[in-house]
Image (cartoon, rainbow, N blue to C red; front, side):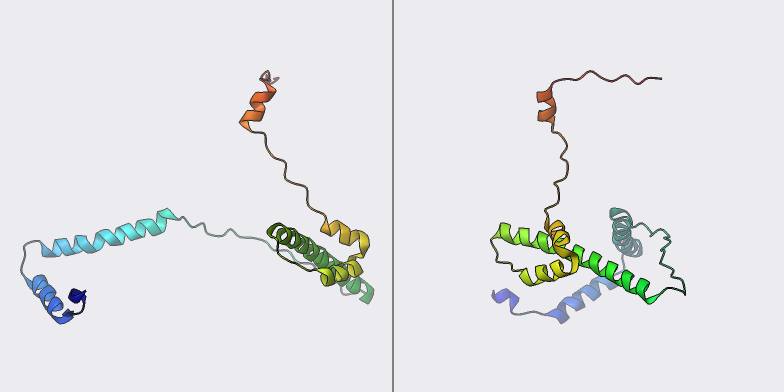
Length: 157
């Protein structure tokens, strides 16, 4: 470790500068090549390794309400949006509840469930807590082999 304690940066820089100043026949070509190759390699990686797609134009629609909308219609829209938000929150909370049960972590959502029941009613709260149906799995090669070969269907023209 004694070698790393005595650093002579000034001497190293002086040696490097003396080496650069020596007249050599192809030094500018070598310097150009030494700088150009890494720049080209980095440019190639940045352009072609991870391609970037420019975002496509989108049309974003918004709701346009009439001027003659009544207070009751406005409140009904507010309530409908609040119920949908509560339903989504209840689904997310139920997923977290299932995750916590699987990990053995205590997760108490009684107060939030009470608010959901007040907002959506008993049927809506129960529907939001239901576990979603698992995605339909495709058959594996072994399952298809166990079923046996099926005759190929000839297209009718």
